[in-house]
Length: 487
Image (cartoon, rainbow, N blue to C red; front, side, top):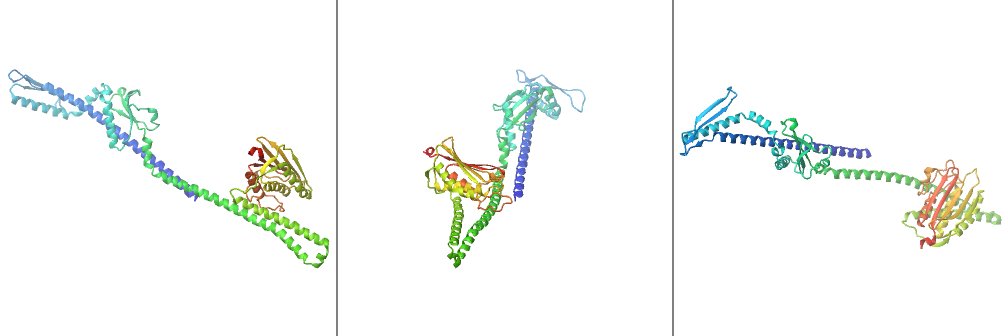
């Protein structure tokens, strides 16, 4: 599905690119066609100009002259050559004779004009050779050129604003529109057309035009594709997010299964021990022996405490389903609380042949915390240190308190245990996550202890960090704000 979405996005992107290219080519073709039509109309205007001058000269040359009595005087002489006859043909007509004679002269003029029309190609060549000497501003008036361009662009469906200039062969502008700025035209948006292409090369002039809103015009034709592209992209993102959530849920399910397995094992052992002790109490001989009875009652008491401790850990899980834990905050002396915890935990450490030290160096140690949760946090860290001790080295625990800047206190719990790998350091505070202990199978737990510690320290307004190296030990640093810093 990911490949399908990616392929669909690729096809849409390529289609949009091709559409843009096609529209750009169509735009360029329409502009070139329009500019060619403009130059053609300018050439026709110039031809018309010279033909009108030629006709005017002919009519001036052959108009009749009248005497005082109204009679036409003189004769008309016309010399011209034809393709069929070599040399000049001279026509002389007497213009005296009144109105009838004048009508004959008019017919002669009409015949001469029709003949010159037949020789139009030859006349045009002569016009071009003479026209190149005229100033370009006269041959192509700026207002006329702009009107022609606007008309031709509209005829080709390019009804949008433009800027243009007429330049000579050196690129110097002859005239230009007020908003003309070649730097704004872009790399491929300036269109150039030669004015009067039959002029000599040293007298060539060019018209340059560009469209400031060309990009908007081009992309307006593919705007309908943008919503489709956006929706497809959103679907791809949602799909990826769904896959990520699915894998995360799969991992969470595996963690919960491990949790249930561990919980079953942790509950099974004390329950089995208590059940066995209860069966022994049914034995009359056991009841008669005070020493045996004391031993059995002690076992039941220890296993009950163990079971209660495991139940407490399971109940801690409910903390993670609440947005904010319900805390009973009181002012507690961190030095005193830590000292009591160390004293209580000392027996368990010595049971495994280890030692625990405390260095309570904080001068100001009053913190505003929930005493029960604060105690549980320190107990969890110490309990983990005992669980993940090294077999070849006696366990050593060090608990310290120290003043830090900004009216805060640092509580450190350090051990010389097996340590934590660098890859696991980022995950140890995640719910249900348990660090692999290699070939050791005697370490049991729910993966909730450090997650609980992290959450509670955050709820108490502090922060916790960890430093560890394999076979070198682990050090947890808890920083909490002092009570006077909260006021």
